[in-house]
Image (cartoon, rainbow, N blue to C red):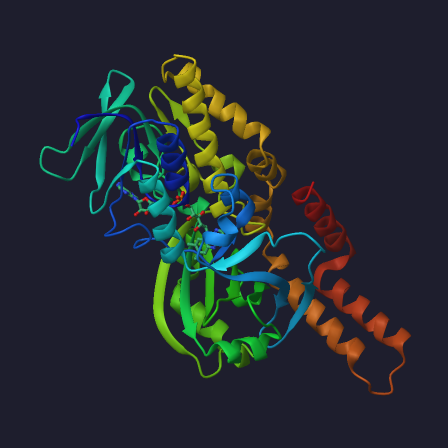
Length: 431
Ligand SMILES: Cc1cc2nc3c(=O)[nH]c(=O)nc-3n(C[C@H](O)[C@H](O)[C@H](O)COP(=O)(O)OP(=O)(O)OC[C@H]3O[C@@H](n4cnc5c(N)ncnc54)[C@H](O)[C@@H]3O)c2cc1C
């Protein structure tokens, strides 16, 4: 192995693969290090993948990537213990390609990594980066867990995922806090293809996704999900680590409760569970993003906290940050400039101009609003379910009386002042 590379990329998830692919394709000598046995072996995702972000890196990815199903229908469920009130979107626009696909991450990561290697990057798996090599303030390479494992490079791209241990250990960023990170657990439920298609009213490569909020998380800030793959259903739930700690509830307990919810149970009836996984998700939002560039280094993807938890987007932010980091590095190389913090500031600027920072900024207050207002996850789902039940029950009571009963129920639970305050908070969260 050459001792010096143009760039070292730590991690072979979507952000690392994107950065490594683009830099290698443009002729840089790139080394990519992955601690897993193969790319994807350590990775967990729901998973919906966003084709547009991948297509910006690999044109025609829709025809090549191992996608499972194109999302035709999205359901959003606000749940109490026994029911849900939901919204539902199903449809396509003529001539427009689907933008979201369900995927099995291990398959996509392996496929993407093949492209990275074809582009000329050297990938070494089962190798953990344990620290950064520094000359003064400047990062000049990495130290791995292998014998004589010091490797030098002009620039290091940190794409090592949510724990961001390498940057933290090197003092480039503070350690991630329990307040800013969610723990999600997921099971893969296998069913015959035709059973999935009958249950969800789909055919061919069409897919359905269900996002779930409310009492299924017992008042903890979090969500549940159900995604249809070709021959399996991904089912999972996640909440903030701080909340799990305070509530003394195990994630597995929550998942079991969710599986037994009357709205979920029939959808997974008769399935065989073959995989169980757990993973952290950085959900601190804009306010939790650390410094993402410095002397000879940049941070991409989950390692920089780039997840939009409101819209369940992470992989697209990972690929976009990986792409913008690589484009910045390539620009500097082409201009004959070095990878100083001053020059790499362009990466931050490019991100600020992209949807990544704009979206994260838009929801910057939401994590704190949810933390301080659990009624959005407990009281309101219950009130809405009761209101729907009252209105839809045909029992000889006139509709005006029913409406008054529903209004009374809301005011009893939250008071007029509380309802008004909550409306303002929601508007602030969605500004
Ligand atoms: C349960 C769950 C559901 C999700 N659902 C969705 C979804 O539906 N849609 C979506 O877009 N996003 C989703 N996400 C988020 C998404 O998975 C992440 O945002 C995305 O994987 C981030 O990519 P990344 O490349 O930054 O990090 P990762 O995918 O975590 O990749 C980091 C890589 O670095 C390697 N690594 C770590 N440390 C080292 C080291 N020291 N040395 C060498 N290698 C190292 C790891 O093994 C890993 O391969 C979900 C996440 C979870 C946990």
